[in-house]
Length: 203
Image (tube, rainbow, N blue to C red; front, side):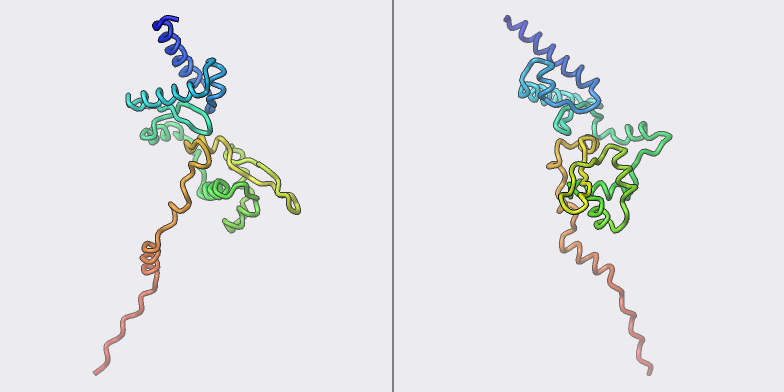
């Protein structure tokens, strides 16, 4: 094979990769991309990384991101405000605070039962969990081996996609959200009642 033929072949693989990812509705795993393109998964990873760097360097309005174990095109993070305005125009698609709290509990404690989530939140979570299931963010992943065999819930690949994560290991540590001891002390001081000022003694 001549050098020119090799360059043409690599260019075709690159263009084919872009075409596949453009029409894919979900992140595509490197193994599947390799099968379709007839190259190894390692070559796919290398090419996707190169493409991602090229798009980032060119300042495109989209990026090639590795999420949920695969690769996909998505809008550039700094343009989220514009995309959100377009997507949400005329309709409300945001999750409620209760749904976000419940989703966070499932994400960090999974697999977790409905009763365990309710114990953490202190309220019934049946309707909220149903909403999260309908949105595709959580699903039943197992059954508790104990009495009653309660359903255990976990997050889905859609959850990873929406957050732009490759795996649950990429979730930020809970310690990042806990204030340090100095901050707690300042907050406690601000919440302490101020004793009434002593009245001056009468002459």
